[in-house]
Length: 174
Image (cartoon, rainbow, N blue to C red):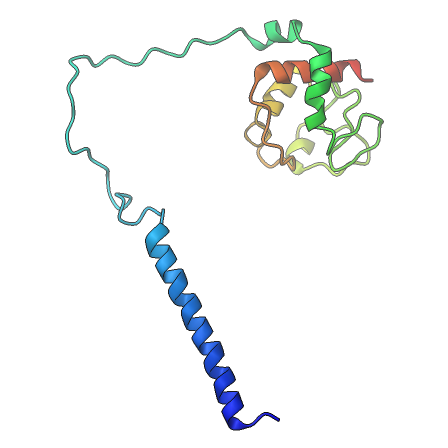
């Protein structure tokens, strides 16, 4: 059934396949490499030439929009319900926890206060603090930046209007 010649051919085919696979990987890496090697990452980057415009002015500070309290006062609950659609894959509004804790009554509730939910250490350290609209705004903008160590994997809501609308909607759900 299996003689020496068949075993030699099989072993040669396996070794040849691995060799072709490794050579293909080497060629692909050399053609499509996007790492820092050879692109100035080893030392300080310097420009080949500079164009003097004659003015060394600091860039003007970006104009800030209205503060969150103003936007929150004009928030649209109906629009917030639509934004909540991004949240309902992990959060419920019926008092039952899911991947995340339930969100009914979350506005002005103590942080980490949903009984029975396994919160991260980051939020358990803040149980005396409450989820005010301003705190929720900061958290929903970028959860990992606001509370390092949180279990929430959501990237956040970049638009302040979306955050204000969803917080206004959550404030109506008891």
